[in-house]
Length: 474
Image 1: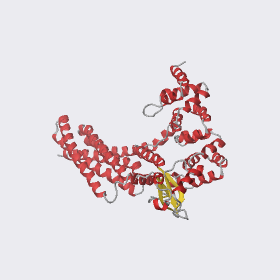
Image 2: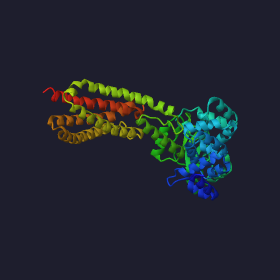
Image 3: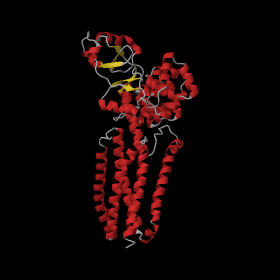
Image 4: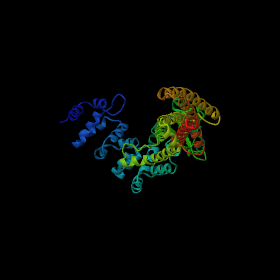
């Protein structure tokens, strides 16, 4: 028996609390030893042992665990999950792995699990189902659940309508606090699993205000909801989820009502949904700046290769363009080989400086810190930073070049090229994201390739051009 198997045997004989302690490290990541225990139990087809190991995990940790296992072991674990566990685990899984799991679960079991989810999570799962199986799962669901999911799927991707849950606690303005509390106690499954506010509506179901549960519990029982309600921030059903996240962050919201074009209450968005959106959008922007997409842990080599190929092809084109600038001055390089040594430095520094500016600009656009009100000031600030850094590094570059080649004129040219390219990098780094955003393109996904093209071409052209004019044509 391997050491991992010995540890597993000891752990299973201990109380459940010990397994829970063993499952996660101090940073709440799964312990490799625990994963090994699961693999060992699966290899032995010991379902009782696997069930004990799963009992030690939160559904989110089960989803994490499935990401570390191969397909055959996942296939062995999935039937052991209860419908409650399956429901919560499905909403936490990475896209590729979730699609694989959905293929393994029978339509009836899947319908039961989806029926226990909040409507927003249920719609996401059903959206991942292939055509025939989607129809089978929807047919196995209750009419109410099926109608709710189909309504959610009718809204565009990454909109408030897809993000919201249709379950919501609403009450008429003439209800008292006592009536409302009694309704919460007796409504049971008709209420959302998690909610923070009671939305006060008029007879046409248009929200008038909201009363936080904490306020409701502190108010006199005879008080009318219309007397204690507070203003609300309504979210249009077709609003982009990134805009929704911005509103939640700006106004420090815990939940917000979602309204249809007629202003009627159709659902709510809670802060737990927004946390996921913020993480998703941040990861998307970060990956876009590097020219890659999130293929997920379950992606194949072919999937990852395909997702990166086109971006690398674009970069190859820009590299060829920069090389064509060098080719213009190949005669000068042949006469003075030192030019080949120095020329990449200004281009490289410009690219790095420009990337810093692009990153700051993209973040400012995403958080709406950069707009028409402060646009001119932001542009001038970046230009000033580019000039000051250009001068500072020009001095450094000039000294290094003089010590290296003992040629004062080449040192001067290297310094001038550094100033020029860092200035251009600053201008391009702020204006390219602004221009792409104004034209409706995602600045995170497109800015870097344009920036590196500009800084490479300008860096090589400024240094080699000045060298040709000053050193070789004296």
